[in-house]
Amino acid sequence: MKKILTLAITCAVLFYGPLAMAAKTKQAILAGGCFWCMEKDFETLEGVTDVISGFTGGKLKNPTYSGNHQGHYEAVLITYDTSVLSYQDILDHYWVNIDPFDDKGQFCDKGPSYRSAIFVKNESERMLAEKSKQAVISQFPNQQVVTPILDASTFYPIKGDESYHQDYYKKSPIRYATYRWGCGRDARLEEIWGDAVTH
Image (cartoon, rainbow, N blue to C red):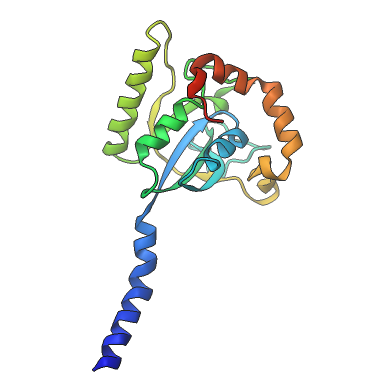
């Protein structure tokens, strides 16, 4: 009987253990211009377990960076530990790492694919996203917040020959730092958000 009980407990741990771990993580999809920068800004946030660069928001299947990605946003798929971070925490971090007033792109990168956007998967996320956007609008009553809140659609990770875009800030730190400084991203973020900036 003891052996049967021990076996049952072991099987339960082996079967339900990974499910319990999986239940502690959620994902968010956000666009904020250059996905190199978004990846770095979120991977350094405690509680984030993974960030993947890719495209979303468009109808074109399998978009590529060097080829056709018309209609898509450069975006990141963020996996986070819900015992450390909430979706609200993700949103709070997002806003202070974008320029919510730029309808032409983000920082030095202009064009439709570089615009900011929050992609929501359900009504709970939409409600929190709308509330967070309203807070930004209230904070800046004399400026127009143009970041839309959109329904999530298929996320296409950068892959294949273009995989070098994943973790670019780690693979090419000098080039990345030069690009980020030259793009004026941090200077603009500090101009908008001041001490709230966390890059």
